[in-house]
Image (cartoon, rainbow, N blue to C red):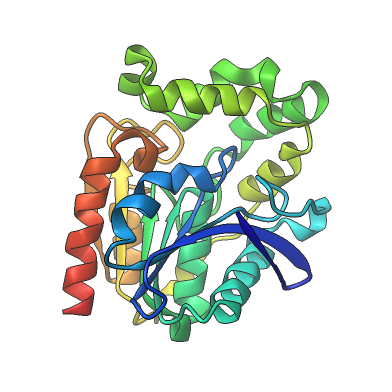
Length: 265
């Protein structure tokens, strides 16, 4: 692990691959950490310079108060990381919350990106706010471990849960260990603003990848709607839920390789 001071915080990150190669930055989901993309770090680094990082307030990055965990600040963190490590223009890939960051970068910092990929994400405001607010409040009061079955249903598809896949088992244990403070990050996720209007003029190539079993942002929210907002493309992966990058890494990696080849020529 390495760490870097950017935008008033300290971010933990991992890096692999040639320094002079095209860079790919991977940005993880709420309730996860940069290990969500370990498969991609290993499999893309022979060809690309690959960076995975933890958001502030999560993983091994610095903690932060509630008012510094909003999506705008996390986007500024990502931009500062890209600039500090001289990664741009890069491909930026984010799952869920990481996708919120990817889309905001596409709208606001196109100079830093070759492309943006949003996996099981949304360009819109939270469509399940009334449903998720009590979950966030309970996580703050009781801790995530008390809500583990609810969190698993939100974060994983029916196939992964029923089959108790290695990914589902691993991240279940991870979520059981999370502190109550993760509720602050969750609060900012569900109270984010829509980015649809900002994306209307983006020239950054955008790919939206959705899991067919996503209980949080089911298609078309995580697929057609993002493509329509950005003029980009969308794909759906079967037998995957909200954590498609962890649930079906081989399939997602194939889609990413095809996407990068389209963009890079």
